Image (cartoon, rainbow, N blue to C red; front, side, top):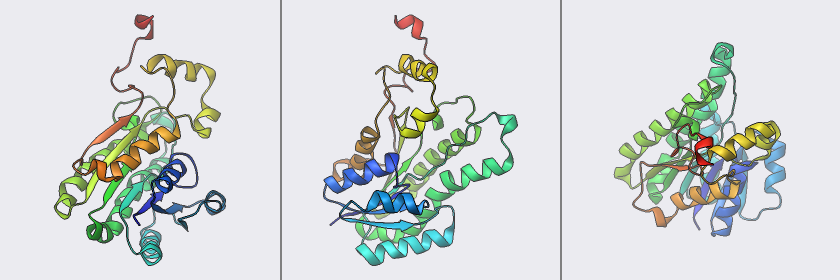
Length: 248
């Protein structure tokens, strides 16, 4: 049975991806640093193995990959989904805040991929890094977050170029506005309306829709796709800044 490692699996896109992998007949190693949330999310799921791990620490990542290999004997896909969002003006972004974002959003995918590569070589597996539309287009208050996600996209290209000779594919998914509990808690009515006006599809995406893109890129259906960044964004990138008044 194929095995996927999903980081940041306790909630949101990571949990949605875990559930979709299970529906497709995979088994899943659920990785998260939030132990209570991880155990709560995994206790009702069959075919999963939860591992508490902070992906920004090399020793924890190495131990996690070792535990997954011991439990499942193989790794067919690595989904680097764990991330932190810290929004604020450039002038108010301290170096500590900058480093905190980079540690999880960029160091995490680097460390997890490096540790998982020997196992992925054996299966000619797939890597999917979760970037963001903020890594493809600039936006206010996202100096650390957007820069980290742009770097993840470049990291994906490096992985694809170097690991392809082993049959390992590496792609990224760049979600646009997604209707997560966190987003709905912090997005005001004005922000929600603005996103709806700016998006050609006139709505937020769902966690399940992003999971569909992730699981597809991990599947054999994407066997000749590597080095790509798939923007699952409702057309947000396509319209640039957008002038909603011109669409009325």
